Length: 526
Image 1: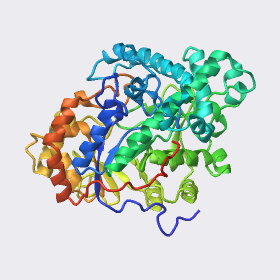
Image 2 (image 1 turned 90 degrees about the vertical axis):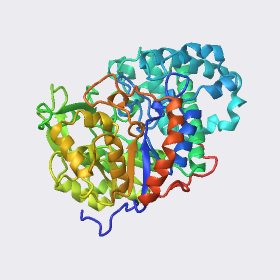
Image 3 (image 1 turned 135 degrees about the vertical axis):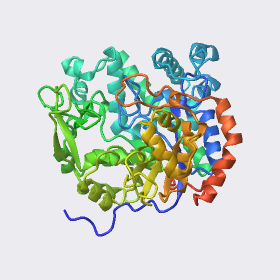
Image 4 (image 1 turned 60 degrees about the vertical axis):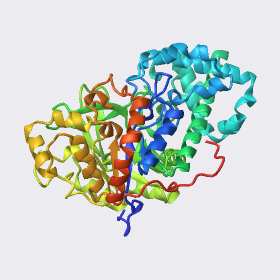
């Protein structure tokens, strides 16, 4: 199919800035950052600092490894982000019942203990809600919420309740009669599972009610939200369990035939074996990519902009035979290409999407990016050590691009510089005319002053923190997503950094907060 004469999504036309922070890193008294008062204070800090956007990682429910890029659902929210204080205030929980949760560390997330303590509290709140269903009437109509989101909510709730019933095991290890959504619906559920389904629906109601309140606060301050869509979903997810037909799944064994990864390169001689099931693009094409359109629509009900992870996979993807010990025996397979984005444009013509196009990018990916009009990404930590032709150096980047000092997968800028090596450090200092004493600020200034229309900085870089504040280390299955900052750090930033960021925004032509990019209907049932 020929490329369109004009780009499909030429949305990035104004200069602005953003801060990258996953909400789990926020301060708070319940063991993990959430949608409560600290989130509102953070939004106030952004507004005061003339920062236009808060970028976050996916907000889905996480499993083993606690990664927001490996979720139990592409549509559901992570209940850990529910602020329990309003539930205490309304009598759904008692203050003393949260004592053990409040005793968890404040500087990092202890996901093991959180799992043990958090879920019983949510279940108590649900049991009390059943006795007083009007107690949250001002948060929305629970019945209408379930009706509006039934297409994804009920399968997810059934999946979650059955998973709990079967000891948390992967759905492929459940009894045969429950290894698909269709099969599970053909028989009555036990009372325990039925109650578990209702509880899971209630948790999602809480999540989306509190998210709506937080989003409304951000809108009142003129701060937009950037979300994140991983291209792949986890094998152990409600999506694969309930829609095996849109994945490369063997109909007899219910197991993937091929899984995702990337081929060997200089840094990884065995390649990277991610293990996510791959899409059956022929099946998706036959119904105009309806599942993907629904996924995007759900995200744009939550966010102003979404980052689309692993954009290259829509051009071609590395398919590894399931069961292979590493990614070496994979092969490149064609992705859906431009017709996918044309189908998306037909349904969501005003979609504002950032294409994650990092890594080795081919000519065909560049052409696809050009045809879609989507802004790509540039990461300044990747800019040094290979000479003046490096694509990520500020003099080589393009206006239709989002520039970062680093991403959620990078070390903090200070941690990166300390371990970058003499060659990289020398080129960094010479290019930026820097002493190297505060490399994080050198990168922040370079990002803001670049021609890229959107500049995003991870919060740990603003705080001048080292590797201890790193969000995620790729290739490490555990120990990630644990960093949290304190109320004192946020208060200090508000008093010492806001003025500098305002000046930086003004001097680099990046206006501050303004009305949100996309207006949601009032009293939206999400």
